[in-house]
Structure formats: C-alpha cells, structure tokens
Image (cartoon, rainbow, N blue to C red):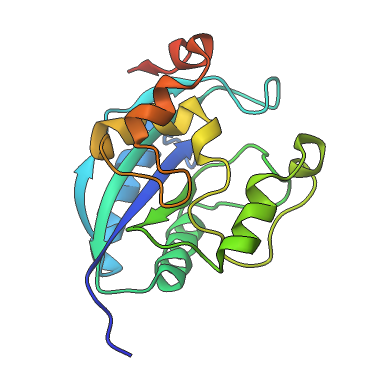
Length: 189
C-alpha cells in the first residue's frame, strides 16, 4: 500500500502536572516528540486555558491544536500519539478523567473512519451514553469535534477553513454555531 503524505489535526490538552512540569510546559515539551515519531508539526495554535470537561471533573485544562503532516496512516498516527502520551505518564483510568497529556486525533484530510454508518452511530450517541461508552476502533472525524468550543477555538487557529467531510461545515462555521458562553470560556494564555 502506498502512503500519501497526509494532513492530521490533533488536539492537545493537559490538566495535571508531571514531574514538576505544568500543563503548559507539558504541551510545549510534547511538541518535540512529534518529529521523533516521523510527524512534522506544520502549525501550532495559541495555548488556551479552558474549564475542565465535564464541569467539576478536575482542574482547568491548557488546550491547543496542531496541524501535522506525515507519510503515515491515521491508525499509525494514533499509535504514535498514544506512545507520546505514555512518555508523559498518561494513564487511561477514567473516561474524561484528569490527565497529564491528552492527544486526540481529530481528523485526517477528508477521511471518514471506519465508515459513514459507524461514524454516525458515534456522532449521534446520546449524551448519557457518551460518558460511559467508548469506541473500540478509530472513529474519524472525532465524533464530538463540532460540539466542543475547547477544541474548535484552538483548531480555528490552524485550520479555520478545513471542512468537515460529513457535516459540510468549516471549522469557522462550527465554531460560530457553538454557544457564545462556551466560546468565551476558552481564553488565550
């Protein structure tokens, strides 16, 4: 199989210290690991302070987004993101729990994985089920991308014009559809 150089959108987040490093320091440090994993960071958003999601689940987050280019498949990129998270002592204990480093693969070009029907199941999953259920395979674009100001605000810094392959809306349009009070909570550092 020939791998064509692809563009990947990745959300970064941290709300726990790691060996004395602050969440901001962790995000800044993790960026150098992408090159070691054969991924070129082509654009970095500003860093933002955002309320913990879900509300009350822990300290506030520092979030950012990056645009990455690599001659890898989406699954290979996800494996490498998990490897970078492990370097920063990420533990997968609780869904939506606190973490030293969270790297979410948001989208790859116009790819929909594993297929449109499965994507739609996860995109339309009832909110009460979202908290307790997680897919056992890579779902792209991220099923909650359009719902989260803390993802869209940083993503707009690096990919404002990218169009969601299923919803047909740009990042700017999805961000404009977010509740203004949620957007206002995402504050640049």
